[in-house]
Length: 225
Image (cartoon, rainbow, N blue to C red; front, side, top):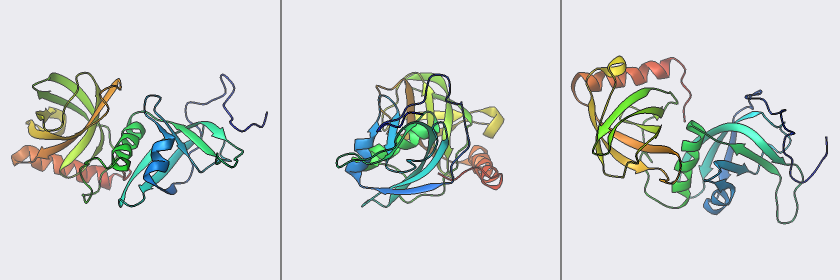
């Protein structure tokens, strides 16, 4: 293997998912995080794991210094900088999609000082539930990235949602009647995969079933994010 300052896998050798690294904890300054996050490419540079093999699935808990806010980012290592220098530090690039991309976008808003929800919040669990969202921008299916006792983060291909939009969320398989929700944050509208945070108005049977489903996910070992 050729050793270089920046290493990419040879065509065809990167597995869909390799061994997973033990959880890594990083504390990054806002400007440090933003410099490493390439939103259009959905790629994140981290000054860690430089000796980890390409293709390894990394699990990294990132805290933004000075904010008290952290999130867990997961994704495969798609490139590595094995050798550092005066201006460049060793590290790896993660290719992110789905939950990993949504967590990275959340941390981007934190690093920029933009309003985010759930700074002090109930635990959130990484589960993928299919939900039907209906509102002024149409009706479409979305998938949860993570859920809590009072809300969820969702991703979908389709129309954008704006902060403050009111929508109705439901799926008969999960909690029966639909629930009202408000959009408390919205991801980059230029990305093909939309993302948003929803705060649910939990009432009646639907509210009880939602909280029961979240508790069941927690007891079933769903990862904390």
